[in-house]
Length: 379
Image (cartoon, rainbow, N blue to C red; front, side):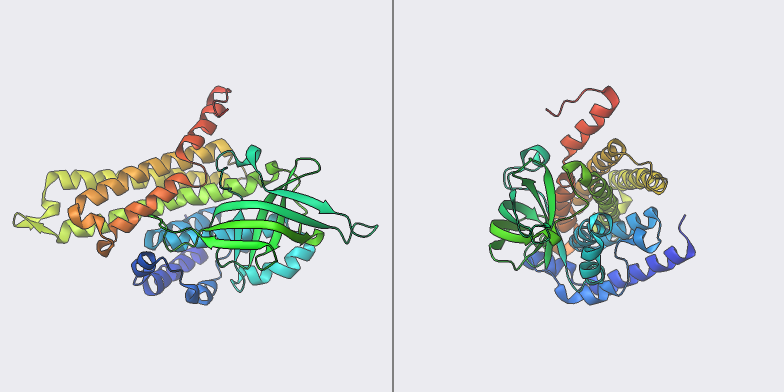
């Protein structure tokens, strides 16, 4: 279903992941270290915002699935930077903002983050957002205006090291949610890494505090006038996380199948036992069903017809199947399934982050429920 150009690029990505990521991913995860040194090589693949480069939405999804199949953390970095920050610049940035920031961001010379979630607000952040923005008048023409940001964000991927972050804040004057491109080195910005995670340990999630941070009017996202304007971005990132659920299942199946064939018990390979074969087949069925759903979502994207309820159903369904799949994979490895030496423990743990972010299973389910009944049970 991919073009020849897309097939060749996907093969190039697979070769890169096998050579540069797979041998080191577990060590990075164990040490909670982000491999910044690989960014130039990753950038050389020229995969930033694939749809903007003329690739299909199916190809863009498979890029995330293939990355996740090798390392969920690297895929998450890529998703946050390219599918949220860079795509935001394409979709909502002014011509001035694009000319200043887009080329460096797309080539990973600079990195970005998407600062939406807050310490007390995750699923309800649209209505409960506490970060505030106050406009400070400048010259008579408004060109010298600036904004002062105060508040806090949490769980911000890439937040500890990013150069820029797209920060969402509520305008004190009218209550509207606005977006700002914030230089992470501005006075008043403080960042600290979230420690003791059991998933996505390579990803550098941050707590970020804004204390009277002055941002120029030129760095307000001109294309954002309300939280509703973010729906396109959030729908796209939710789709990519559902593709992560596909990649995670492929990874679990890869590891479990190889282990079942090679591991000897009772004088024969584990794969000789009927219950082990049943689990492998169930894992494969979940993965194929999830991929089939995401292929259809990609087709709808290509037609401009994928709505939020369809995307929420896909994210909820694929992440639920993923949870089942990684649990069966961990079971096949027995005790070896709880140490990262065999990869499965890392796959199993990372799945919990996929299950939760870009809309928890419960919230995505309620979005679909509202669509099929016409009645909202969210609030």
